[in-house]
Image 1 (tube, one colour):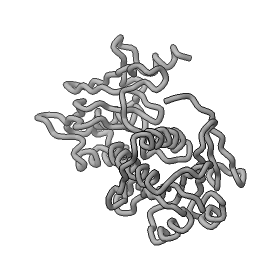
Image 2 (tube, helix red, strand yellow; image 1 turned 30 degrees about the vertical axis):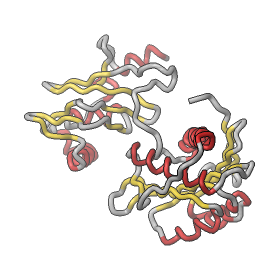
Image 3 (cartoon, helix red, strand yellow; image 1 turned 120 degrees about the vertical axis):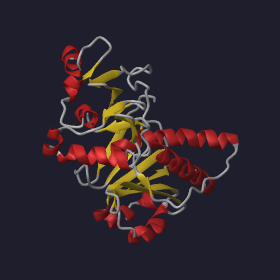
Image 4 (spheres, one colour; image 1 turned 90 degrees about the vertical axis):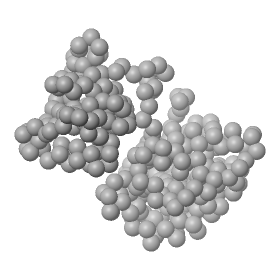
Length: 284
């Protein structure tokens, strides 16, 4: 992803309240804010334009992140109809400052965004189905560029639904350093990410939790959720990860693998046997 300068304007000085965002040398513009300031968002001139929008929050039935992705020729009129949805607590919408987005453009973007959100799996996509639209080749390429700019900005606006789990090194374009976690007959591999730690598909976890897990209910909750979701599959006398799985930290990942509390800074080592703690100490 190319380097960029992101300009965020805090309309009330508070980074969680209404704000606008723009990238240098790009015609797109984002407006974001909490549900509590819904009326103020609709007072913005940008809300009268054509664009795509995101409603984000927590799904009450699963307690997981949820997102609704929509498109509208008049964002202000369309999003009023979503007040009946109770899961969302933030809205973000994108328009174009040169007003060149057509109905076909935003339908194409909506379809691509829904597919990307489902592929990422970070949030429950509450859309019934993707609409999408066919575009001439030149328009399609233009919208793919628009899409990449949106994806670059969305995490800075508290929307991480489109971040894919990948082995690419975001800092250098190469491969990330693979780390290993071992306990008894169990071996797992993974790597650090900007927002946590990914355990790779095929990695293993102990079958039975340790007694220390009782002191840390979050460990049991996390493991049981992965078992219920069939991310952790029983294989003989251990569990195996059925897909790449991102955790909030190296310790969270190690605790799931160990079946009890664990220090991720010492549990994960590189191919030279150096722990993550030693690696980070050397880098500083």
